[in-house]
Structure formats: C-alpha cells, structure tokens
Image (cartoon, rainbow, N blue to C red; front, side, top):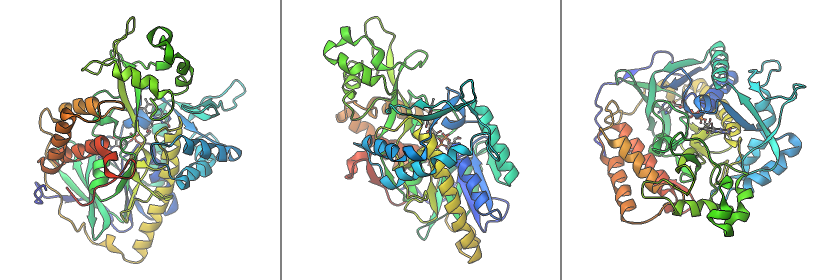
Length: 481
Ligand SMILES: Cc1cc2nc3c(=O)[nH]c(=O)nc-3n(C[C@H](O)[C@H](O)[C@H](O)COP(=O)(O)OP(=O)(O)OC[C@H]3O[C@@H](n4cnc5c(N)ncnc54)[C@H](O)[C@@H]3O)c2cc1C
C-alpha cells in the first residue's frame, strides 16, 4: 500500500463541474467519444485530456501514416461476426460486442467519408473514385477500407470538436481515476511541464488512453509521451479486464524495424517439414496464438538468442516487436466498465476482439465504442445534472501519493527489457528469472513512491500474468494501489 497523503495540494479544473464528461486520451477513440458526447447532449461540458495537442499514439502518429478499417456492409455483417468469433480462441470475445461492431460499421465509416457532414479523410480509391476494398490480416474477405494522412485526419477531428465546443486540456496526463462510493467521480491529472496536480470532477469518465505496447522495449506502436499505463489505471479504479496477455507482435528487422512476414522466409531450407504453412502465414502480419501456422513463429522463437534476436543464415537479425493489444477493460455494448460512471473505448477496452483480431478491427472498434461510450456517458451525465446528482460536489477523494513524482532512473528501461524477455508470446513462461521479474513488478506496483511507476508496474503485471487468475485472459484487481 502506498501512503495516502498527497505530495502536493491539487488544483481544481476551471469551468462547470455539473454535467461534465471527462475523456482521457485523444486518439481516435477519445476523439470519437468526445464528438458523440457533445452531439448527444450539447449543454454538457465535454473535456478532452491529452498529453499534447499534436498527433501522438497509434491512431494519429503511427509509422504507416495510414489506417485500415473493417467496413462490413449490412449483407456482410453475419459473416464478419462469425469470422471474428472463430478467431477469438484462446482469448475471449463477447458476441454482443462483435455484433455491435458489425451493426454500427456502415454509419461510423460513412462519417469519415466526404458526404454531407463527413470528415473527408483521404480514403484510397480507384480511378473511378470508388472506394478500394482490401483484405485485412486473418481474413480472405476484402471488407476493409484504408485512409492515408494521419496528420490530416487528426486536424479534421480537432477542427470538428472545437466547432462543437469540446474543450481540450492539453499537456496533462491522467494518473488516477477518482472513485468514491463505488462510482467514478473524475480524475487526477498531472501537468507534464511542472508536475502540478489538477483535480477534475466529472459525472462520467471515459478512458481512451491506448494500449500496452509502450511497456515493451521492442515496440512499433505510435510514439508519444506517457502511454502504456491504461491497464493499471483501469484496474486501480476497480474495472475488470480481459485478454490482457494478448498483444499483437510483429517480426521486424532489428536494425530499422522494417516488417518481415515470416511466411516469406526460405522455409524449404530452414525447416522443409514446415514449409507448407508459409502461405497461410503470409495472410497475417501479427503472430497468431492458435492457428496452425503459429508453429512457424514458435519455431523461430525457439531459435532466438538470449538477447531476443533471431539470426538465421543469410538473413538480417529479426526480433518480435509489440504492436497493439487485444485486451483491456471489459465493457458492455455501451462502453461501460463494471465501475459505475466509468467507460472505456479503443485499445484499452476489451471483449470485442479475441486473440486474433481482424486487420482493421481496432480502428472500427475505436470508432464504434468511442461513439457508443461518448453517447452513453453524455446521457448519464445529463441525467445526473438534471437530478442534482453527485457530480455537483467537488472531488470527494484525496489524491493518491506520488502523483507528481517522476520514475526512478533506470526503472522504465528495466521494465521494458523484462517485458521483452518474459512477456512475448512463446517465450519461456516459467522459470526463476521470470518469477523474479514478476516479483520486482509486484513490489513496484505496491510500493514505488511515484504513482506513474506503480501504474506502469501494475499494467506490466497484467500483461505478464493476466491468464493466471482463472477465466482465460480475465483478471480482476479490485481496490486502489
Ligand atoms: C504502425 C501501426 C499500424 C496500425 N494499423 C492499424 C490498422 O490499419 N487498422 C487497425 O484497426 N489498427 C491499426 N493499428 C492499431 C490502431 O492504430 C490502434 O490500436 C488504435 O488507433 C488505438 O486508438 P486509441 O484511440 O485507443 O489509442 P491511441 O491512438 O494510441 O491514443 C491514445 C492517446 O492517449 C494518450 N494518453 C496516453 N496515456 C494517457 C494518460 N495517462 N492521460 C491522458 N492521455 C493519455 C496518448 O498520448 C494518445 O494520444 C496500428 C497500430 C500501429 C502501431
């Protein structure tokens, strides 16, 4: 248990607290949630927190400068749902959430196009201006659309949100969700510039702080300040999480992180008995957890040296890189976690993807559950405002300790090196070194002076040990650090 006394007195955010929806994280999920919240209840204060206003994270700053989105048409919905559920094992996918993706896809994608009121993103089209449809990873069916220009997409969202009256609170990071009487009441934000703590009361809180890939040293997630602590933040607030171990990993060249699909390796010379799986492996970039071609990834992992590098004859050194998570807070169809007043969407929400995610499925889920969470949170906040509900009081909880303290020197590199070594798929799952690493994380999660350090350690533990707790991939960590 960390001591409960705050290191600094917290300020309060300016502006009206009653009827406020507070959104943490301004990637695609957070932006879409803000749009929906403001549209559903224009009189509400919708506050969007971001570490910086310029593009960051995987949605708007990923190295491809493009995103694919699953866009099943109404007559493809049933096939989409069947396919997504078939790919779920050994993870958990809730059919209700998968059906929600299919049901909302046409409308959510339409809003990104150049029709009336659309955001006019740069979708790839053929010479006749028809939208091009692509296959996504793990699927032979061309249901995905692709847009280029993430900076332009970011600008389009920011402009729309500003026009609607959404307020941006830039330069801040959320390090604690305030929960009192079993209900989310706001969050504690820390200034990146001077460490000042800001208390923000709200009627509903939406967590959209992205995925766990920043916990790894070898990673190809979008860059940006902070990141990687979503699981800890949600678990600390009492939310149940699901599929936390199930990240996507890509094989890349160790030097320049250029992507290499293992299906393209010379299997006839490497291991002729496995060569028949190479074609199937070419159909998806991330390593699979349960498909037959996972045998290839397992074979490659077993050949890695202690430094995690794979050196095959005549090939550049390769390594596995963390790309994105397929887990997060378990939500219902409206994006609600099991903590009243607390919502989650995007890469920190789980249950709509299993172990193998359809390529383009995360962008669709950020849009669909961002919109659903934003709308439901706004309605809940509006109802509380009408009833003179609990949001009228200032934040009723003392901040946890160490909100303004930086990480200890060397903590993050050690955490990332340990995650590379022990939390990648097909790595030795047991053994003394792994146990020692888990114990070190546990100690940091409980006793580190810095709140950020505790959250990162807790997030890392959820990735490392998620499936230890019973239900496949499902954990519940109640209470506060
Ligand atoms: C190279 C690459 C290519 C990809 N291609 C595809 C694709 O084609 N199709 C697809 O479906 N998916 C793709 N993905 C995955 C997808 O981009 C992400 O999963 C998705 O965009 C995540 O959106 P998000 O809004 O949840 O998180 P992000 O876009 O990562 O945004 C999270 C935001 O929260 C902020 N934040 C973090 N911590 C805090 C905090 N404590 N307080 C406040 N703010 C915080 C971050 O700064 C960031 O801006 C790709 C990922 C990568 C890395």
